[in-house]
Length: 366
Image (cartoon, one colour):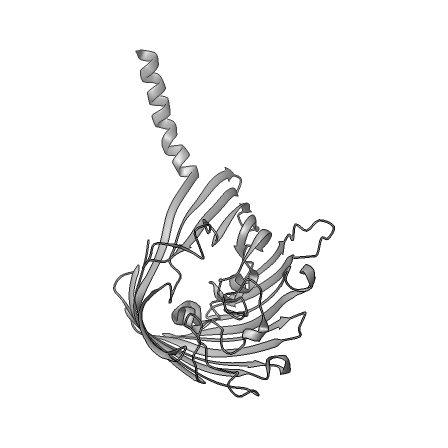
């Protein structure tokens, strides 16, 4: 009996120490609401829609302290539709949002392996950069789209959905990512995604680089990503993205500007996009955001162009829950009559050169 009690006492003494060294966290974010679209395939549409301001995601993160500033880390994350409960993009999409494991060292950085966001998202979209208004207030509707389906991005629902791959909708499988710690405001990153193609190291691969610098209320960043696809010259051509921008916080106002360039290296199709915007914290729990974008294709895309204005009001019910109202307007032009209809990201294509969306939504996280 004494031996049993001693064993239990030792186990009890060791348990708090083990929990202090390691942690596993369940996390998630959910977004629901109703949207009115002025024209989808020639018809008005009033619909329940989710994953608009933010994607609806659940996942697991874990960290194990190895001592000496070293840690093992992992993350598994899945996207789903709140309205239907179905996985996105389909039933085989378990942990398709991110699935990685790696090592980190305090004050040095980290290396991770698996399916991960590319560096356009890491260094232009996500904090600390936040150069895309889509992250702070615009959501899916603010990500790049428009009359650019001829860009022809493989494995893309429209051919140009989030065409500059800044919004985190494109992840890289079989990838190795190295991101440094922040040194005097400077952070660097590099990524390589293996193509796993016999006989060719470069076919179907992905290469990315990123850099950002932040000091006080000012930030500046740049990123590059090229992903090759089997559908483009048997994996030897792909979609090349690069971009850069800056941000500035002045009191209660956050300002952002971003430029991106997207090229199909096989067809020569190019779309350039510029956006400027800002977010004003009117009161601690009330914020207003607005954003203007100009997107222009080259001759291979019939010089199609789109302008878009996005505006939003957010009311913070708590640190985790926000009510919001969003309005979006896009108008377009191009060389070919009838070939440049408006198309806001996350909605169906308009049958005219104009499209308007209004939305009321609720977002919460845990």
